[in-house]
Image 1 (tube, rainbow, N blue to C red):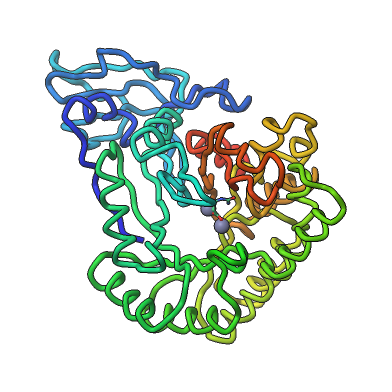
Image 2 (cartoon, rainbow, N blue to C red; image 1 turned 135 degrees about the horizontal axis):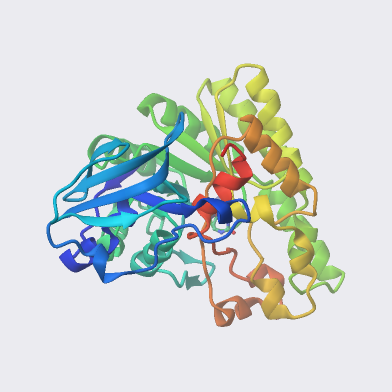
Amino acid sequence: MASFPPSTPLHLFLFFSISISISILPISESQQLQGVCGLEWDPALCSTSGKILIKGGTVVNAHHKEVADVYIQDGVIASVRPNIIVSDDVTILDATGKYVMPGGIDPHTHLAMEFMGTETIDDFFSGQAAALAGGTTMHIDFVIPVNGNLSAGFDLYMNKAKNSVMDYGFHMAVTKWDETVSEDMQIMVNEKGINSFKFFMAYKGSFMINDELLLQALERCKKLGALPMVHAENGDAVAEGQRKMIELGITGPKGHPLSRPPLLEGEATARAIRLARFVNTPLYVVHVMSIDATEEIAKAKMSGQKVIGEPVVSGLVLNDSWLWNPEFATAAQYVMSPPIRKSGHDKSLQAALSSGILQLVGTDHCTFTKTQKALGIDDFRKIPNGVNGIWTNLRYGLCANNKH
Ligand code: URP
Ligand code: ZN
Ligand code: ZN
């Protein structure tokens, strides 16, 4: 994962300077999953002296929380302790009764991504603005190669990210496999700061690579010291499931979850984990959506294997009932892959997150308008896959994790 500072215009930096480093969360409301930032936009946030004191909040860090003041100078936290006395030129924000915590990191987003014949509607500016409003101050997006070419993909995404207003980093998707791709991976790692690569076991006919290639890719990651990530669904079986649904005359959004049940996610997760063990490399499983996949991750971890499981907000808090909504536009909004599962998977994912079987929360923010989703009005296979959520990560990640 490469990370880059934002190319932030000055006025935006001032506007966002509070959110960039910390989030302020109303204590009483946090338990009810309401408002994260607690501070509305206020011109007073534009401190002319560049000095801000956040006073009297409950400061939450990794290991403990305490009532303290946070003193910020030129966008950098200079001091955290109770009762800081400051001069008159410091802007004081009263955070009494609120949590003050580091901004969240969303490790899985897709801004301005070309996918399924269209492009996600949030670009780096609008997506990041939403993230900041929710207390997320850094995200990691996925570079999508251009016709399989990694270097061209990297350049394209550096350009897309020019209108950034917060910190970001990149994983890189690998959408085809050959010698050039393998060589380019080394350039990405050594020269561009990319150290995590995502491989697709699904999306047959577009991004999917087969086991032979996945094995080579895992070997390559191991050699480069990079972290392989997998989208774990059995793409061949999904294609067959989709064919069956269409044959049965099921063309609407409910065909999506019916064609790719949890067992196909469990199977691919198990396969990827075993191949990673065979190669002896760590593995990161993105968007874990089911009990089936979670159980495979739990087993691997119990045996001492290094597997990182990433649930996403939609999987943690939603169930598939939305996909059965008779209104196409409503149901289509919830079409993503792997699919949002039946009630029960959500609670299991939360429990696995709480107990450390799953380790971090992403959003897989990948937004399409109703018009874009309507590309699949006659055939669920053409509904662009993806849901929103970039502003929810801190809120739901913390609550599902249940540690505060
Ligand atoms: O449906 C999804 N998840 N869309 C984004 C692409 C991906 O597979 O992460
Ligand atoms: Zn994926
Ligand atoms: Zn994704």
